[in-house]
Each structure stands twice: as structure tokens, then as C-alpha cells.
Length: 196
Image 1 (cartoon, rainbow, N blue to C red):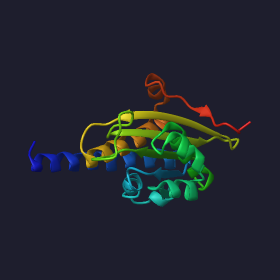
Image 2: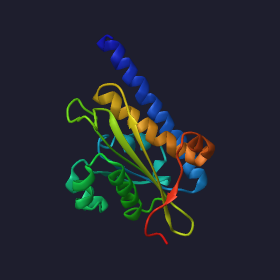
Image 3: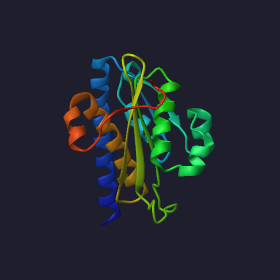
Image 4: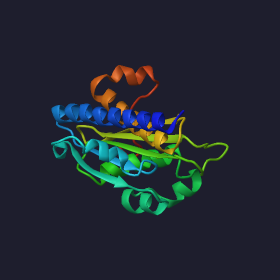
């Protein structure tokens, strides 16, 4: 693949991400919801896409860019022992990031991402392209429901980051528009521990 073709592919993926963010914003605004993001491996790329849409302040509250482990703890309340026990790229950490984003914002829905974008940093059990997603939603009674998924993306660092944004926002959009698609993909919301 030539460099020009690769650049064109990345531009197309970025355009898809921006368009998806706009559609999600339309649905969130129609539902009267605010969104927030907690990002590690994407470094704010998801929030950037969301705020490309004019009027996004009506439905986007804030973003947490928590690249380091300390930032995950300081900004989102992710317990340091949880990170030490499971690693930053793990389901428990992704879920804690998503819940922490809701607790520290005025939003009703959150997406959190933590992964290995590459080119280095991978391991046998978490190779480059591994991303854990956490989604959180605040229900009418104030309780929080969570959902998680591990994905393995192909491509270079830029592609992994863009694919991460596309998937994270697509699941939020399906949650609002087509919940049956989530069930078909084996995803379902469950109440966060401590809600009862």
C-alpha cells in the first residue's frame, strides 16, 4: 500500500468518525442526554470528533484524557490497586473509567477506552491493537449501568485509534437507536456494583 493510499484511508476513516459523532450528537440531543468521554489510547480523539459538530455543547459535557495510570486515578477515581492488579488495558479499568466519568460529570452516557495502539507496548496476552471499552449510562433513578467489550484492531497506530473511536461511538449510537443490535453482538447493560 502506498503512503498516498494509506493517507486517503485515514482521511476516510476520520470523515466516518466525524459523521458518526454528528449522528450520535443528534440522537443525544433529541433524547435530552449529555455525553462524556474517558480516553487513554485515543488521546482525546473521540472528544475531538464529538466537538467537531456545531452546537455540540448542547449534548457534550466534558472529556477526560487520562493517558497515564496516575491520571486515571486522579481524574476518574480508578483505584490504583485495580490498575496494579489487572493492568491499565483491562475490563475492570475500562469499566471504572466509564463509571468515573459519569460520577465526575453532568453526563448521562459515557464511553471509556484503554488499549495498546502501538507500535510498541504489546504483550502476548495484550498484543498491539487490543482495546478494552467501557460504556456507562445513568438511568432515570440515578443508578449506573455498565457494558464492556474487548476488541482487537488491525492496522498502524493511527488506524487503531480511529477504529477505536468508530467502535466506541457506534455502540453508544446503537444503544440509543437500535438496542437490538447490541444484543445481537452479545452486549448488554448490567447494573454497576454498589447501585443497590
